[in-house]
Image 1 (tube, protein in one colour):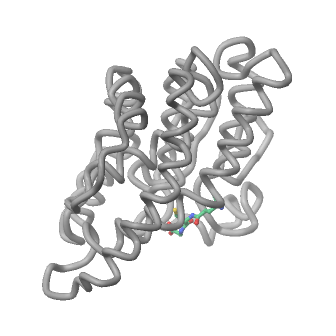
Image 2: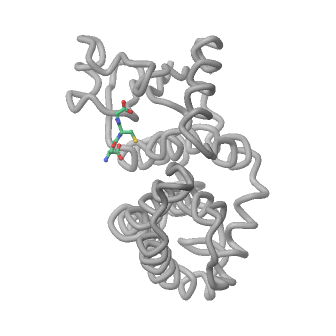
Length: 225
Ligand SMILES: N[C@@H](CCC(=O)N[C@@H](CS)C(=O)NCC(=O)O)C(=O)O
């Protein structure tokens, strides 16, 4: 049995859960991190000594780092679909996964924290504009790439779309003025038609810390989602 450890609304956990669902894997979600705790336990130390989520256990094989987990699951369970067989196509998918972590994720997640996760009276318009511009500058690079092809690594959806798809959902749902990014918007619409994206990425968008507390309580009551 595959176990995924984490909170299903945490930005680094969402790509792993989306991947598992795209691959139609049978897995058990172990709620961990935040108020669910468990990161300080001896059991979790054997899975991820960094005490961070996400982490997985595939049988007795533990693995951590979200994008490494996405690559592992796709290579093991999605060869020829999410994990391109063609080496150059696979390299392009990986290139955009690494780019998402190094270039696109930092400004978008900071913009998310400066708006959605910040009480209106504490928001700093100058900081928000700066982060919005940095996010747009990054996404313009993706926009030019997607002008040439439907998905990040070609004509089909692959693992290359997963981290950026998570970022796109955050970016397009933050209430901030933004210029048109027509090719990123068209790709985001294509992702939005995918059932696993709707169910596991478009599911959580907390507007204030109370929402998260309510969600954590509800999730705790459910036990395993
Ligand atoms: N580079 C790591 C970052 C992991 C990370 O920062 N995880 C955060 C949540 S997104 C964490 O474990 N925080 C402690 C907690 O949630 O309790 C990855 O991509 O997996």
